[in-house]
Amino acid sequence: MEKRILGGTGMPVTVLGFGGAEIGYGSAAQDAVDRLLGSALDAGLNTIDTAECYAASEELIGNAVAHRRNSFFLFTKCGHASGFPQPDWDLDMLAFSIDRSLERLKTDCVDLLQLHTCSEEMLRQGDVIAVVQKARDAGKTRFIGYSGDGAAARYAIECGAFDTLQTSISICDQECLDVNIPLALERNVGVIAKRPIANAVFKYADKPDNGYIVDYWRRLQSLDYPFANRADAASTALRFTLSTPGVHTAIVGTMNPDRWPANAAMLEAGALAPAEYRAIRDRWQEVRAADWTGRG
Image 1 (cartoon, rainbow, N blue to C red):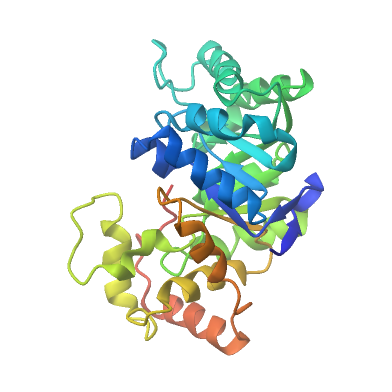
Image 2: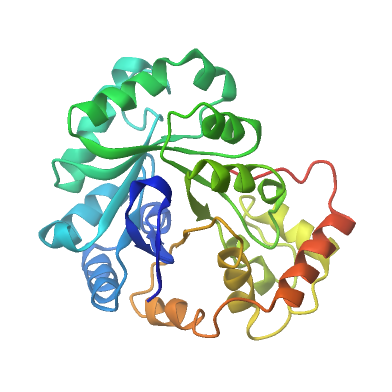
């Protein structure tokens, strides 16, 4: 599988990474996660991303692949209390949470520790940045990043504190492509695309019950892309995201141990033709509404 250097980190990450939200929120069985991640690593995956608030995701990943720790890059996120008595973003809680993540993941050091969608105001205050910098200086993470969208993501790039940005990029979420991604490319900040196939909303003929994805579904109805009803819609969507200059890896989650080969196969056609990529961008610019902001 193709690898790209993640900005200034120097990490050669696979263009397709595994996201741990779905296995956590979906209460996946440990044996299923063992098979899923084992087969993905065997097939060439080298990037796994999770977070402290994805239910049991960190424990599932730690149990499944800690014995193969040297064969992949491990990313997690912090900021939400998720079981601690303190509120989100409490500084003591944040430090405790980082240590708990290491324990859950069965490692002494993650490759990337990301602040998980805190506000621009909080970033500007600087205290939460200082906590992850301290963790880096203590050897608990190699690099630090910010996960989020909009003005906060722009500040995260501009402030110079972060090595990476994880942000929403898809056929239904292109706000960042006009400012934040070009700025990240200019500053050599690694870019990790989350929700890169827009939660596969093209699969739903009718409005989905899942409120988490319904906004993307509404957007897709307005965008009315000609490929949205084709069998290769997921491939086109993923290839669009990875054809964006400055994007290094796209994080895709699944609970199906047999899904990884299918996800990897979607990239075999390579980058989108420039005209096809441009048509998707032009359609977005034509119909986007003022409230079509990046979705965290």
